[in-house]
Image (tube, rainbow, N blue to C red; front, side):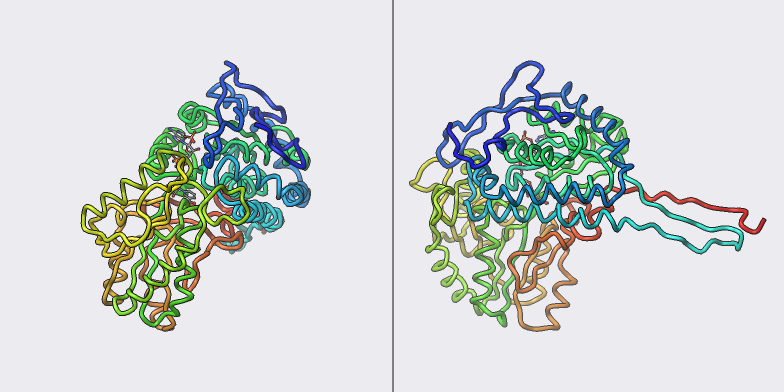
Length: 487
Ligand code: NAP
């Protein structure tokens, strides 16, 4: 497929190991397709355990000098990477839309959002401070320093092909670690383009490596190899649990950014128009394929009719189509399986008594498109309430009291993002503190940025990405006791 890019060097199809572009040892290739058209874009090197082992060895060697560089120097190289990403924003967005399907506007936004983590952690590299702690006796001092945890591994999903990589690579590199990254098989091109720009920015060979390919083979090597000291995974909860278990024999540090089932609560004192706008953006972003997408709209009974009517009207105005067309609001789902999974959840819920008020089927555009869908009368036992939908489906659940809303919201094994709308300051505090979630959006539908700690509780995982806390996952504290000071 002929792809028009201003900077053709970004279109990379081999694995990036130790500063070199390599094919798979056995010559295997992985096809990459456009979910909007089904067309083959290209194929990339499909690597496995042996290539991963070499990448880990390269990362180990590279770390010897990378960690010794003054933080300011590491920060400067990272800053160049940030600048190059922003200079190539349009091309990176095009590549992303082609392989992932999201609209160009969203892809541009993700490139900037992803880059913001590199900018942020480049700055944080200079703030990895230690401590001097009062000792139990006068002739001693306690000193704490922070050191890079070691070679890191990252396994990332297809729904944010750029940002899920930078959110891990940036703190790792800032801390003085090196990293081996396995992107999702659906979206390797965005990851390889980032590697090319890291290379152009002067990030030394072996510091950042990217291998697409067999997830089980690469994953098994990354999780069992004793040189790897940390795994950061973003993806589904079942795979996260499996990888966590695989890390146990070598006791790696792990960060797990897993699935969600976000409640979006609208109380009867809320600004309803603002809540509708918040629901629209938090529900339909990336066609509903984000871990923080509102998954259950809990609406207080007295305003349920008005809220539903306004949400239906706003949803009807969204245009579905190929993400490369500038006037499109919603792109396709990532593949045919995703369309089937979403449709099953919708049909199962309708069979269990939910009322369909909009959409409810694959779009007549064909391929991987699914109609924006709204269901009312949803109850906790229905499939759309219990499962992460990962599609443009808004289930509306009506409730009577604040206590009932909190109980419904917390009635899930997940605990990533949550949202609520109210103008009552007392309720703001009560509800925010009662929600069992890592993230709470209050009168806001978009919650993620590089300055804030992103992460979940319960089966949504562990660890935080972004903010001043995000670098801690890539550091170990070393305590030194200095004695004999009175001699
Ligand atoms: P997934 O199936 O768990 O895949 C995620 C990554 O894991 C991909 O790179 C995949 O590789 C890899 N993988 C799959 N099986 C593996 C194995 N046996 N060993 C090692 N790696 C393996 O998830 P997904 O469907 O791509 O992503 C959607 C999920 O991610 C949703 O649940 C969403 O909520 C979650 N998510 C969470 C966050 C967060 O920050 N909490 C952010 C975004 C997404 P292949 O592609 O090669 O199979």
